[in-house]
Image (cartoon, rainbow, N blue to C red; front, side, top):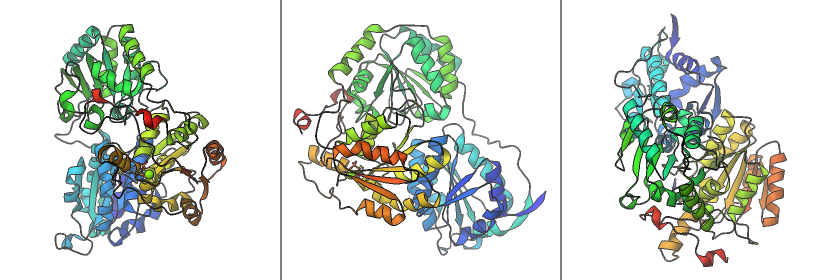
Length: 563
Ligand SMILES: Cc1ncc(C[n+]2csc(CCOP(=O)(O)OP(=O)(O)O)c2C)c(N)n1
Ligand SMILES: [Mg+2]
């Protein structure tokens, strides 16, 4: 046993848990920790410019690599600045570990300077959180939190440590075992349920897989491919499920939902057996619940029992890890062919192609994304903000590997793109990483450009500059009689701004400049910003209007195709 301070135990435990990077920002109560950091050269500290950035960076790190991402903030405002990022991670089930300092134990509950009850505040957006009142409990609390964070359905955790607990010394004893009564995620699916699911799949005439984000976290993409190929089942994904099944595969029919492909929505509405795997039948994906495909029998595979039957009645619930359950299912289902069903979906796709980009002299955002796809040979990691550009990035780039599209789905957090791209690039330094930024979204976290220089990250930022909060403008155009109330926004000169940070930038004003600019950006060794002055009033189609059913998916109106 060695004598150590709470700060040393904190870092020692994180290091033993495999943590190599902390995204953080200092403050009074975490100074003991910062003072200790140089003793741990195995842990790199990335100094952010706002704690929201730290939480998104940890999240991007986690989504890109599958490993737990760690962020750190001081008490009070440092901790509350993390909240949006923690909520983002919570809604998308990503393993983010948030570490915060708090005021000294004697001041807790006394409205001490910079005190916030961060465990109370994050109670409903963490899988679990801890306020550690004794240095001897630090190691076990961190180990338990890390275990909860990355096992089962992943999700954020928070560990809050008062300043004097960091400072106090104690005998350090490494807890070998982590065992939590009441927390034992079910990995193996129930054999009887798997048998019933296999029977249902064998009997299905129009089977369909809807695969979600869980495929990435369970590393189940090979098993998914095996199931689809053996039983000849078409696959659509959710928005966060993009990349879990290769979009170039014959059985891939894109993704469903509010801005999903027409044929994917129709397939979901026409299927007789739906195998939902690692997804949660979310309202943006499924449209109006009441009128979603009433005849389909649903097999729902999810590691979180709370998801089963939450939004739809389930014919066969299977609680378990997607990889295990799919492997069992592949062994049980019969080889089948569904030529009529597949022909029907193919015909939907021919009649309603959804992803066709019309000829236009304007710089259409779809064209920018497609050109990026072609120039990068479909290999880049794409990280997006929230809005129209996010939907175009999902639609017009094609993804063939898991973790290739990194985006805030459940919370829809504007400002996610730049910090999440930073986390992704640090986790996977060899990946070509593009941040597809909205001009509005980017302005929420653009201060993190400083980190690109500090850390010398070759991230390519593509601003989709339409002068609008485009998704808001689209809704106002369609549902509020073009009353563009507060959706036009003024811009700084993004190129000058990049220049002020020491980052190279190119303004792209004409369609003919798109391809050369992307080529130049790729050749440039460091970070670069491309300011694409895209068409201002392009809309995202297809669309399921809010509150409508998937069967009511609308395609681009003819007059818009003339623009
Ligand atoms: C933090 C936050 N505030 C507000 C919203 C609501 N919202 C959704 S999309 C959007 C517009 C995004 O504008 P921009 O980043 O320019 O993207 P565009 O739609 O123009 O591509 C807004 C305001 C949000 N999703 N997140
Ligand atoms: Mg915009």
